Structure formats: structure tokens, C-alpha cells
Image (cartoon, rainbow, N blue to C red):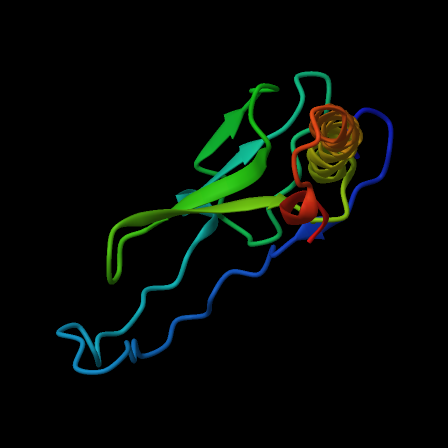
Length: 138
């Protein structure tokens, strides 16, 4: 739940421990990926929300973060093959992702209107000056 609205979580599954295949002749091919435990996962929740209970007996979360400036919900460090951080975000259909897309499309709509007026303006000026406009109409 984000700002009182239910939002879908995207890509919340964590890889199970398996053999690393790699692509082509990868030098680390054949290494075993370690299991990600709750002690590896940091969770980002609101200050007034209850901390989700860890379902694995005897385990707890690595860290509980209250940062409302970021969009990730949880992250963990994947040390097995290449040290990298993996993040869990809201789905692409969420309010936050859709808001940025809407802003981009609205800006594009405004630019189309401006370009249309510029196009008409140039046609009028070139016609008034009796200059060929054939390249503008193609």
C-alpha cells in the first residue's frame, strides 16, 4: 500500500541457488549461486507502518529503512558471481511509474502543437516572399 492506494509489486521473486551458466565462455561459469537469506534483505517502509514479519523461523531482516525519497521497496546484495545490488520496485502499472510517462507524453503533445504552428508560420512567410515551398510540403 502506497499513499493509501494498493499498488502491485513488480519482480519480487529472488533467484534460487543454482549453477551459474553465464553467456559464452564466462570465467565464472559453473559456480554455485548462494541462497539469499532474510539477513541479506533491506526493506523500505513508512515510519508509521508495521514491519513485515519474516516467515523463516530464527531469521530477521538485515535492515529496515524509512526513506520516502526513493522508489525501491527492498534490495539485497548479490555477492555470488558479480557483486551487485538487486532492487525490488513497484510494477510498471503503478501510479509513480505512470505519472512520469504521463508527463513525457503531455510534453510531447505540447511540442507537436508548437511544431504545427511553426510549420504554418514558415509556409505563410515563404509564400508571402514567393519562395518555393515544395521542400516544406514533402
